[in-house]
Length: 157
Image (tube, rainbow, N blue to C red):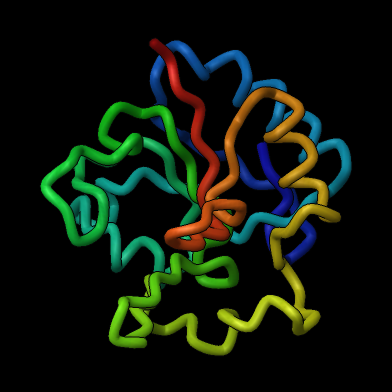
């Protein structure tokens, strides 16, 4: 269960790696108990595994076999070890050396400026960040080369 933007309880299904399954159950229970709003959680199959379509629809998702944006390296989503939360409001932002800014989803331009206050934002003072990092997840919003504000991942050796 999760609390949607409508304030109601919704059932959901997610596919993840067995190494993070227990953590995700605990995390989502804590988020649910705190009425933390997540618009929707659907399998990416409902979007024909199209990550852009899923993000543009603000879908929270975990497993999706894909590559890291702009590379040929398998994303941690491809291993089921990463999850994106409310991605429309918490975009992936990469600034190239020529100053070009790449945003995913492309429809999230108004949420790139993290100094602004807006609903559903993830940063260090919000519950999603606190709960995921307490469970040993790394937050993409703290990365230096890119900012992936929607993204939490856990690595295993």
